[in-house]
Length: 245
Image (cartoon, rainbow, N blue to C red; front, side):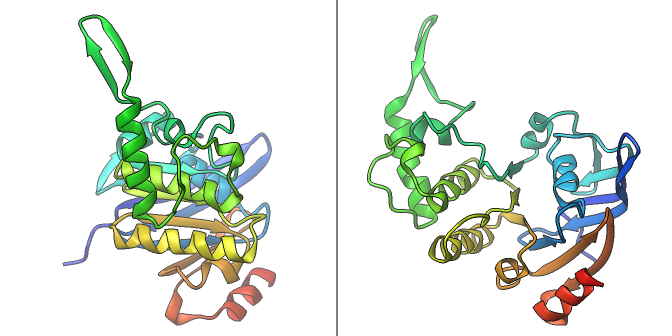
């Protein structure tokens, strides 16, 4: 019996005024899978992902989660199903520390009667555990995010997703502007996501970054899906030629 996709998008269209940004795109992600979503700038990658995480509504098309039709009116709707996105800015607040960023919007509290306050001790302890799960060694959960490198910031965002048991993590250009060493570390984080059962979509224009970790690669061009391949069926060179054609 054929296994049901974790998420499936069917015939997705999106217009911005006269610009037809997505033209009948079909896209799916299976459980425990890393999908590379690639294409040049303007291909429609970020638009598709913003629809999948509830930032935008499709103008036409359907989305299914574990076989059930869903409609995401906001990112909160997607988060309830365990679909979260790390956009190029990582969604972290620079002026807050690591523990506050990991629990942002989902802070544990203590309470006595009507009085409530943040459980900072639990936040600190659980933050360190979450960082260690992906192999990110940071001495103090009280370190401010603005003091971290680009790779460490991606690590904090990914640790947050693992802690809250995300089903599907959408990584929008996660290696953009990172050094070679930091890029390798982010790829290790994605490997760890898969090992722990979290599916992910790795959005990038850099095929050399996504190819080593992807199970399947989907190519968009000018709002259309022009190719879909299992990694073993193709090569980076063939994919580049297809994008350029």
